[in-house]
Image 1 (spheres, rainbow, N blue to C red):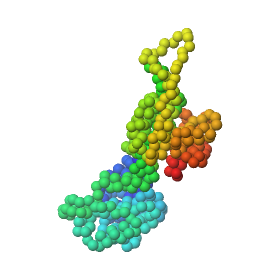
Image 2 (image 1 turned 90 degrees about the vertical axis):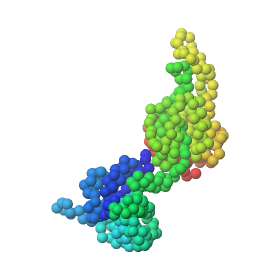
Image 3 (image 1 turned 135 degrees about the horizontal axis):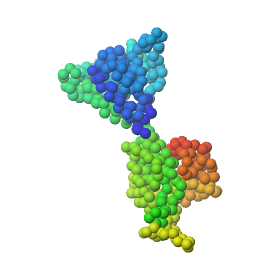
Length: 400
């Protein structure tokens, strides 16, 4: 669920002293969830070995158009490499490689991949300060930028020549930050804050008994995971559940009762962009909860119940620029009841599911949903995993 999870990064390494840092860069990218392949220029092998890079990347390292390590030479397809990647990062990029890229020369595999790449191409220059400052180098950088490539800035400090100045390859953590930002900021919910409620609430009868329901929290947690994948900051307010989630962009607030959940929602609601109420909040609670365990007796036990706070109605009534999405679990007149709930609570959308549909509703890993928009148009989906349902729900929200 990191920004780089599942991303395919092609790392091009050229013959500069900064190449010795690249195994650690590969390790960092993989730690963030990316898949990494490496292509090198022949001169890069003088600074870092293909064996080291193959070991840390867990992929073969390529450096020539033809692999001649066996009796049947194999063509290394530069076109396929360029199509495979989500991002092609050339780091370090020497002045020689910058010049070749700017002028369309193709005398090694790395340049062949560059000329074939369909993905964004990023360049991290690394050279001595005078080479970097030379008008020819700066012209080549400008030319590459005009082609749509992204040229990272250089660092400043001690150089291999013994001089100090601009020309160092950026530090690895800075390069990593740039890459993560690239993949995050292109996501539809980047810099948006999403509030999600999930799971059941438990309303105490006495210290050992409660009023609750069969909600597992699976749907709410699936929505949280999808929101994170879409680049959002997520506040997840969850009732009791065994579901787990960890992410640096997630704030998990664990609650028990409807009143606890209402208090948590009220504290954050003004700051969010979208609120999705996927929790199955108990509608009633005992007027008075016993301080001690109620002992079993021969007579009947009567509980006096009162309404719990209506969290969804609160959000619908207090929204300003936010979108508020509800859930409706029905057993009869499903579409009619869901549309009534949407209108009565001033919602921007509602997700309907029915206990009549096998595999839908509480506890299971699947759901069968209908998304109803504020204009009462609806889109129905077949039985799907709750993860797939979460994707469709956000597609409907983002389509508005």
